Length: 598
Image (cartoon, rainbow, N blue to C red; front, side, top):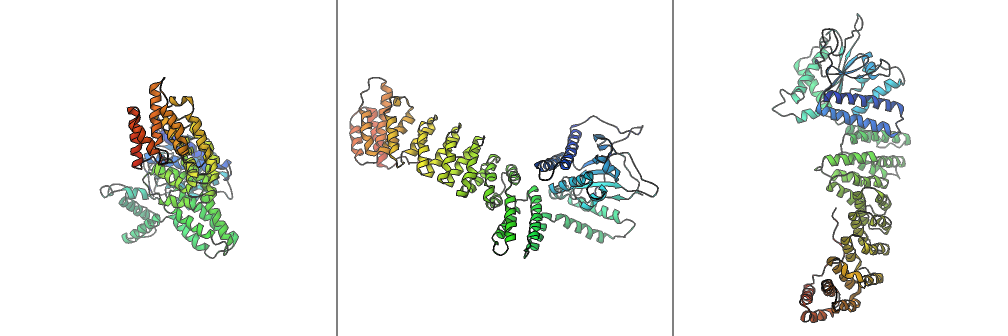
């Protein structure tokens, strides 16, 4: 129960003093506009439409952001609109569709928000106005509706009717008469309590001692003149309300619902309980209670295995797990992980592991939202272990416009390691970003099937020389005659001397590994060719051909290299020496590709 006594001052004529907008007042004005727009959206659209949820989320986020820079946030009502620190921040004609008028009409003169506002409380607050403005059921008194809800982070002042008529005051006036009956909502400041220290608790009204003193004052005021409370009785009441405030409502509610569920077999009752559990779970996600959420999924997963004993329970639990994999929840998870990069990933990994295969598309979409490597690695590691059930759902994201998403998808498809993945990797192999094509090449190299080998061969003509080199390393050991035929065509191409030395050397080496002893004849033809024109280019090509001889897996090649080491130009002798040294130390370059670097 918080009582504010600071209001806008009145001038001598009794009018409110209006000062120019400062940034804070402008922010409050925008917040009230969003509040009005949100209510109208909730009134116009059914709950099945995505717009109501979208506006609810925007309103809650706007409230939390505003409360970070100014709290508590206190608004004063009038028949026409809302005032903040003496300035009108929203105004409309008095009517039953004007939220400010509805509050003022039912005696609510002030309404405020605390920084502990939760998503659940925000939704309940909005629902009160929607119910009032829609006039569903019996006519409501909004002050009573707020009182019944007991939203701890929203508080208000109500002026009741007195015997000699209704007391009305202009917004902004302080010092209401003590003869009026004042109602207060409860106030909770858990976050502020945790952040306060020993040094500032004494003077900080939001610290633990400040809250205790404020509760004592509130209790004393409520019972003043009706019940005499000694200090001990009041202290016990304070401790009771404090313990009650520390209770985690969603967790406790879920435990109770779980106990109710035991032995329940009625299809209607089971569905109702699961529906309520889903609502509580939704609140838990909105409040980022990710450490607890996997435990709920674990329980639902256990119930899905009880189909023989209780088919209704198993069916309802399956629906609950399906709901847990929806797009909104996983986007919320991604946002939390982006804002908390050092958080323990274990509960998030556990959460994702319990999801049904139908959620794998939404899980893949997280790769485009996560900012940190550790979180992305967790996601693509999990997807890679889902096997056949994940191929199509993950593979469809190769059509995403973000290159980094497609690259991660190509990596995941390689880890899934199913021939079906080639269909999607073909698309990634033609991506305009070389980093995506490289990851597709690596994944195709892991699949080791004829369909993947065919796509790998296309990489030999990739426009990026670095990818051509990687492709040559990948195709050289493939057990197909086509590799040798294609490489031999490249070796006989008159443009061979125009290739950059690194690519030229890798092409000759791949030809040697693919053809074995069959490649000796053509390599020796290159080495023995007389240099008439372009001597420097031919000499570099001959040196690379000598290195390639060292890649032929045949013992007879050693004798050939020994002869070259004793005869020929100094450059060729040096190349033969190096090739012999590599063979003697068994240090040939390994086949295949290096590990991915995401």
